[in-house]
Structure formats: structure tokens, C-alpha cells
Length: 521
Ligand code: ATP
Ligand code: MG
Image (tube, rainbow, N blue to C red; front, side, top):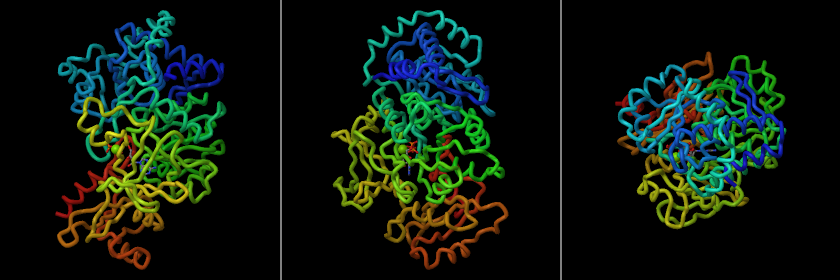
């Protein structure tokens, strides 16, 4: 199936069922209404000359129009290019040029950013960019009106020219470890993965999925939108950008059954001073993913948010994104402390990065996966692609994993984040999990910093509970003593209010390292 055909099929099946709710405006769509707006958007884009294979950029926070453009471009076979809402002119110009975007759909502004002014500034440098339409502007309304007056038979005709293996999306990675890379994905990649993620959450038409994660990222548009529409479930957009209070408000008012987030989002929601006042009783399931999911946080999500069937997913943009997921029937221990088992129709192996040979179960190695979910490649970066996808089509993820006898996987961390202290391999994740058990620590991140004697030393950045006494390195050492091997005890502690983060809510350890190295002198 193509993504467009799948949406139409769902609409035909579920009838007037609710498809989409945008909480900020109170607007609502049933499936047939959503299809009507998607088709109007597709015909409107067609009328401005968008053809199969053309790149259409979208630069906007989460909103209903994002959804229209996502499905409309898929119906035309155009390649949607997700542009990070946090970008500024330099990065915007880079993406517009790198992807050769000819039509850009943009919000006029977001938070403190004036998108209109930024687009005007870079436009002259981007010769491919023919058309810019700002959401909510008269041109946008005209585009939709043209589309509404258009002939839907044209879309049926376009559909016959599509193949499920065509590229239809360039999604940029989070930029956690460096500059974001544009993963090129097909209908087949995205739709199948969305479907299996929805299966993993047990979605039916009765589900109402709260999506506070960005659409710009695969977590929002793939696991969120495609996960929902492939099962006839309802998409709920709590707010344009992430806001913990508005998210819980949406769960309560819209009776959401499922809630998504990276760990930092759940931590923020659980930490709201009036957390107990929200009625979250409708929640059944949800997904925590994107970075290591602390066991303590998972347990609180189950116990305090009532997400008894919550799942953890592991994956990456390059693999559409999900490779493994926990199941509702796994015991609590496995559901909080592993990333689950491999998804249907995928192959995985855990290899020694040095030799490429599969390691025994229980031994850490690089997680590799192969199958329908692997991207076509990084957009116009064959050399970078060849470093990640080998000649046998195995995607080398750069993540270290351990597989147990029953096939459950544990992500020990990124190869890049592993610390080698005095010849010992230290996985920051293990220490972070331990630090979470400290009564004053609400969030902890551990990095390696250069050290003359040991090569690298450990440093913990911690966020403390409000009102807690400042935490010194000595006090932490004492807390760890007898519980952690001496070489795993952080030598330095830095108390912070927040961590450097990507738009997707991931902590940028690269930046933490830079700051720490400067401070340590
Ligand atoms: P970049 O590739 O630009 O540095 P990124 O890798 O964070 O950024 P994404 O594709 O958004 O970009 O994230 C995928 C990565 O997130 C995985 O490779 C893995 O390191 C991490 N990750 C995702 N899910 C989990 C999880 N459940 N547990 C641990 N780590 C996870
Ligand atoms: Mg990555």
C-alpha cells in the first residue's frame, strides 16, 4: 500500500469516526473530513506544480496542516522534507539547498522565531525554491480553495503512478551526536513501521493517541500519525510545541488512551506541581522512546499515570524508526528494563564492532538490523550512507546492545558515549540508572572527560529535587561507595537546572562534554 491509499482505506472502513483533534484551536476532523482536507491540499500543491519526486519542505510546529501536508505529498509521490522548528537561517538555507526544495510550506512564526523574516533572508540563496506558502495566509487559503475546486479523479490517476518503494520523505536525525543527517524513506518503510508500532500498542478505532512529540521527527509523524491512521485511531495534538501541562490537560479533556514521549517529557509531566490534579484515568498505553528510558521513570509512568500497558520502543530515524518494542504481556521487569524484542519482519544481530562477528548472547555489541525498515540512504550522501549500511544491507546503528537468551534487548548506550577509564569500558547508562535511585536526584547524565592519568574520567551532571541541599562530589562518592565499582564512581559532579537538548528532547552529550572540558580547563 501507499500511505495515501491506506488513509483512504481507513476512512472507508471507519466512516465518521474522529481522526484528528487540534487542542490549541479546538478544531476537529472525522476521517472523511480529514481525507477531504488532505485531498484539497494535494490538489492545491499539484496546481502549483508539485510533481512526483519533487521536494516539498515543511517548517512548522505540530498543527493539523502538518498532517494535511504529510498525507498530501504522499498522495502526489512528492518527497516531504521535515525541517526542524528550531532552525535558524544558516540551517534553513542548508536544508533548502541540500534537499533541493522547490516548494516550502511554513508557519509564519513559532515561539520567538519569525519564520517569515528568516525565509525572506535566505530565499535569494536558494535557486530551487520556487514557491513559499505560509500557513494561515491568503495564499494558503487560495491553495486549499483551488484544491477543493479540483478534480479528485486526478489523484486517483496520480496514485497509479506511485510505487510503495518510492522515496517520499527526507527525515533528519535528531542531531544528538553531530549535524543532523537526512534519512530518505519510502511509503513501504514508514507505513509498515507505523502499522507495527500501532500493533505493538494494541490500537483499535477506540484509541486516542496524544502526540506531544514533534511531527518534524519520526516519533510524531511516523509512530504517531501513521501508527494511528493505519488503525483508525484518533490523533490528538495537545499543543504546537511540547508543554507538559497542556499535554496532561489534553489527555484529561480528550480522554486519551495513549501518550507518547521521550523520557525528558515524562519527567517534566510527572514533575508538574499539580500533577495529581489531572484525571489521567483514560490512559492505557503509550510509548517511551528516543533515549535510554530510566527504569525509575518507567515505573512511575505505570504506577502514577496508569499507563499499565506502556511500551518502550528502540529505533532510529534511519530505520523508519522502530526496531524493537516491549509488549503489553511482558512482565513489569522486562517492560521497564529492556527495549523489548525485535519487531515482526526484521532481522537483527549484535556484533563486535571491531570484527563484525556476532557476539554471544549477554555480551554487548553493535546493534545491526536489516529488512523493510532500513532507509534507502542519506539524501545525496552516498559516502555517509555506505558507512552505515553495508553491502549486505545491514544497518549499523552505532548503538551498543545486549541480547538475552529470550531475545530481549537492552541498549547499553551509544558507541560514541562509551567511556574508557583506565582501560575499563564504562557505560554511562548504568551509572545514570544508579544515580536515579538517589533521593535528591531527578535527572542524571554521565559523560567522559579527558584525564591525564586515566585517559578519561567520569563526570555526572545532575538536576536536583527542588529544595535539595547542593550535592558535592564527595557526598556523591559516599553515596556510591560500596554500591558501584570504584572506577564507575563519577569524579566530578555538576549541578544544573537543565541539560543542553535537541528539539526532540534528547540530551546532547557532545555539548555537555564541550562545556565540561572548558570548565575543567
Ligand atoms: P544523530 O543521529 O543526529 O546524532 P539521534 O541518533 O539522536 O541523532 P534519532 O534518529 O532521533 O537521532 O535517534 C535514534 C537514536 O536514539 C538511537 O540510535 C539510540 O541511540 C537512541 N534511542 C532511541 N530509542 C532508544 C531507547 N529506547 N533506549 C536507548 N536509546 C534509544
Ligand atoms: Mg543517530
